Length: 383
Image 1: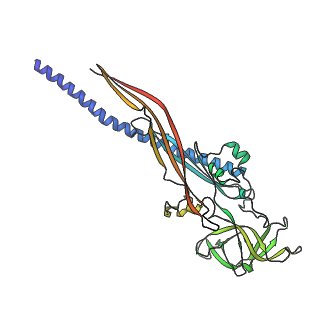
Image 2 (image 1 turned 60 degrees about the vertical axis):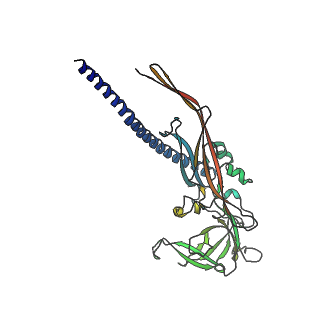
Image 3 (image 1 turned 135 degrees about the vertical axis):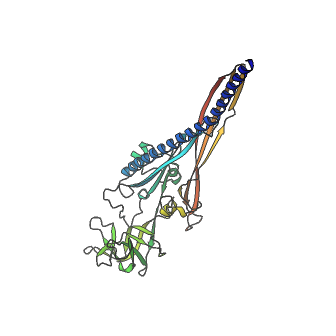
């Protein structure tokens, strides 16, 4: 009888031990899966929120820049805290989430303008990309409302410290009479088997006229393939088979003494000023905005790059203290840490010497998050 009781007690003890072992094994696995679900849900929520904020901020910048430079490409990135089941210290992780928007707020719905051919253009009219990062590059509401056009206007580094990068710059070219100008025309009737077709004309076939409302702002016209007189607002100067159009903002003719006061004709086209999208701080051909982005190597990519780095530095006071006092088992965790995330922005700057091509440069933007000192205890009673 005594032996039977002992066996029964031993069997109950073994069952409890097995239950504890299964709970420790599968319970930790379930907690890990739960943490992954929370991690994913938080990340998606943060991503959606960042996209909405980016659109609203871009809309606000474009509104306050109404006019020629009213286009705003806005990119926002935030490093948001999420659950990290791999971190034994309980700090979690920070996931970069971002959103972007490209908005044009133009009362005339034209997106272009004509400048005075005799005056230097205003650099505030250049299109820009605005990149905002929490606790680093940032534009507050007062800067947008009152001073968005003047931030870093004479200091490129000051502008870039605020995350403002030009995506184009002004250029000019003298044209000989036999200079070929390639013009892309929408194939609205699908007569050429594509969305666009092009025609090549000579500079001597383009006529410059004086604007009736503002004599300082001339414009150019040519005779289209359909027999209609069309305004020359963009042109391809490369002849490399790719569509590389530039927007024309000022023109000059070859008529001696200027434009005719009665006919307003200024002669044949001999000079243009245009906006070149390849010589800004950021060349958008090499950003995620372009469809050909997937084929770009990391050495060419520009704008906000995707290869950010994250690092956790745990303080000297980070430790786990374990005490076994009779029937109670204690663990005490004390920890401090600094999480550092480094983002990279690829942009271009002028090469050495006059006329040198643009060279690529990469800028590191570091964001630090300091975790306050924390401690937490576990106490387990045991027989």
